[in-house]
Image (cartoon, rainbow over all chains, first blue to last red):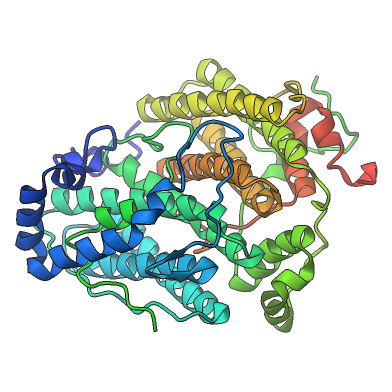
Length: 249
Length: 242
């Protein structure tokens, strides 16, 4: 029965933000503008608060992309090719994914520099970091091929204070990535960009579930049909950790 | 006595780990492999002109790839194919829950996965009907049950196969709404695969990019467990001429 030390497997999560069934810290903050501003100021200064506002404004039109996430034959997505702050059409989607992977690679780089983890958990976190770095390389290449400008690496900021806190944030971050790819997949026009996005999507899903197992969470917290995230939702979940606006050059 | 739909022999197959399946272990996907497998699959649907730069680059790297067999399948056919796979998976977990002596964590995960696969069946039946098609019937299946570790090993094979099947079919779907739904299911299959691998102490991923499988490759992997193939699977076999 004891195939692995229990201490490594059942770390309780104290952060509510890691449970999708409950509102995340960010979601709660979103409903309360004054506390949201306090939170952003505390973690990233006023620049972060301004950053979020501009990203949110720029991505606002993304909200309507998926009115229905479960019904078969849901109304056809007619926003394929729409523009965002990351660019028009497919290049915008690739740049958004690249922006996210830059953030994730930075996240695991910082996480793996802490001494909170050892053994199999550390191995897993290192493997994930390697995967994210490779995703960055692939997406850089894809973005260049699309010839519409490439998003620059964002500035990031992390504050890991304990093993439990760091693991809870990691679970929250990693469960966002698959939803971000899922949300964009039906908006992609080019076959090669779609094949690439689908191929990264399920790697992110595997990573998320493995981390969920570490903290005694369900492999698929949203049940049999995974939830797509809009660009706006994705960035909100990273707020305070991404502290610069997307710049496409 | 087990009976298979095809006369393909399975010599010396031990009850818990068929050798054909041992070979199914998913190997690391190189970038060149990914490019050829994913992109050529897409090219079958969109025309190779649509994927030119990637294909040329991958060819320059010397990757060999057999032509995919996917071309010409409708969304309904693809969803029915997925339905057969989901029937197989759900039945595996359902039977496993009573046939295998599972410990706490393995049992919890198996219950979660079973519940998700059962919901995928319902969903796909609804999706096929919504599109005006006739949902395929459940296949008759047979599994070797033994230890927990053998059960999880085969579960990993099914989940890895499922993920790569959905990823291979994704770019072939005509409807963006169906693509969204297939992606939702693919992500959950990926989560199952990651969780099972974590429980087994295996690498959670084989490289940074998921591989893809053609319909024919999927059938070859799961055929030993299907006693009578439904139409969606028979059509994917090479000798069918499809």
